[in-house]
Image (cartoon, rainbow over all chains, first blue to last red; front, side, top):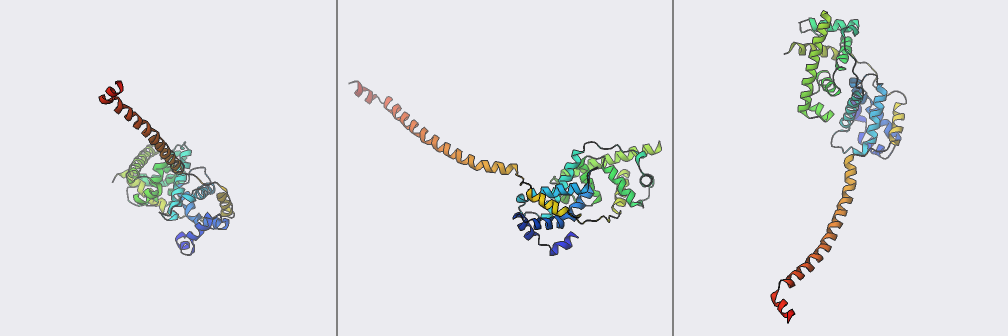
Length: 198
Length: 98
C-alpha cells in the first residue's frame, strides 16, 4: 500500500516543506507514513499500550529528529528504525512480564497448543487467530530485545541483515539473541507440556 | 532439527496465516493533531552536536593559548640563553674583573 502510494507521493518535496514548518505538509507526511508505522506498532505492541499513543510518540520523535536525517538511507527505513526502537523502549519500560500458565489460555489457544505439543505431523494448526494470540503470549515471556528479534525473524521472516538495519544491532548479536530466545521458548514449551500432563 | 524448535516454527507459521484486516489509515484528526504537535516540539539535539558546537570554540581557545604560550615562552627562553652564554664565557669574566 505504501509502495503504491510512493509512486505518486512526492516525499522529498514534502520533507522540504515540513522543514520549512509547513503544517499541511506535516499532516500529509503523517498520513502517508501512518500505514508503515501502525504495522510496526501492531507487530511489536507492548501490552497495555494504546497503538495510537505509541504511533503518536513515534511521529513526534520523527519530527523532532528531522534535522538529523541526512538522506543516507531511504526515509521510510529511517522512520521504521525510530518506530522499532520506540517499541523496544516501551517494552523495556514495562518491566513486569505476566506469568504464562496453561490454565490462563483460552479454549482455542489451549487446543492449538495441545495440537502443536502432541501432534508429531508437520501440519500447522488450523486456528490461525488463536495461534497468533498464543504466539503473542509466548513472546511476552521474552526480554524486549529477544522478542523483537524473534518477531522479525520467525513471524515477519526478515533477514538478519534487515533486522540489523532496523535495530542498529550487529548481526552476530542478533544471532545470539535469536539463539537465546529460542532456548527460552523451548523451556516454555517444556514447562507447558509438564503443566498439561499434571 | 530440535523438536521444540519445530513446534515453535509450526506455531509461528500458523500465526502468520492469521488474517489482519485492521484499518491502516490514520484515524480522523490524528494527522492534524500530530503534525501540529510535531512542529511545535523543539528539535532534538544529538550529544555529538553539542560536542561539535563546543569543539570549534575549544579549538580556537587552544590555538590562542598555544600562541600566547609560544610568544611568552620564547622571549623568556632566549633571554635565559643569553645570560647563560655570558656566564659561561671565561674571557668576558676576565675582562670584567680587570
